[in-house]
Image 1 (cartoon, helix red, strand yellow):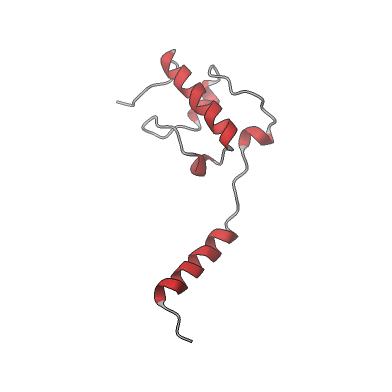
Image 2 (cartoon, rainbow, N blue to C red; image 1 turned 60 degrees about the vertical axis):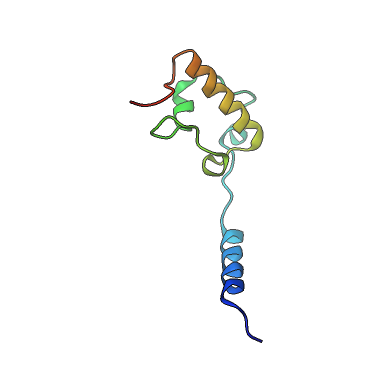
Length: 87
């Protein structure tokens, strides 16, 4: 039986993705109920060098805490605790 190259690549990629360890949500691990917008030190860890919010797949947050994080970052930006953009 002849297997095409694309099918072999797909299987190899699927195996690599299956072996990858899922990041645990930092806020779930610490049992944090709500994310505070005044805690700028924690919020900065989830921002890129251009002050963009890291996506969920990069930060490892669960959906619930990613939504809370985005809201907290936006509130902190509005209160001028975090920058909208870096100059």
